[in-house]
Length: 154
Image (cartoon, rainbow, N blue to C red):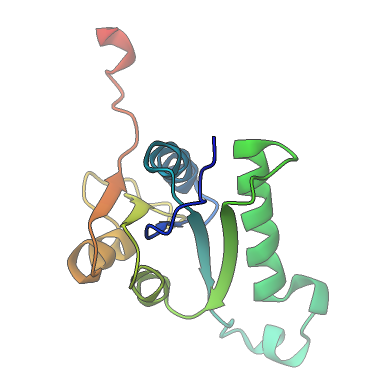
């Protein structure tokens, strides 16, 4: 397969390390393969507002380093050690919704999980997925968690 060799717009996938973003990444990989296009995996990070982080920054724990490390872990979990050349990783500073909408400016599709790391269980969309669904300039796939009763229906 020559995925990513075409000139078609990429699939952009927003991740944050949550289980929902892992599921979104898996779906984005499936779509990129099916459409024979590139995949951009994007993670946004924001500067800490803690006074302790501001005065005692640890270079190896900077938000950008942590974000990129998380990106690498997610992609390695999906592909193994040999990440295809049609996959690109991006860690960018800014509000996650804004970063993802900007990254999707020329994308074929934006893929996100329905909820991130907030820890709130809800049948509703999270703030980032809702922002992306209403503001992205391309189609948005919001990947929901499996239904609790789905296993019983198999």
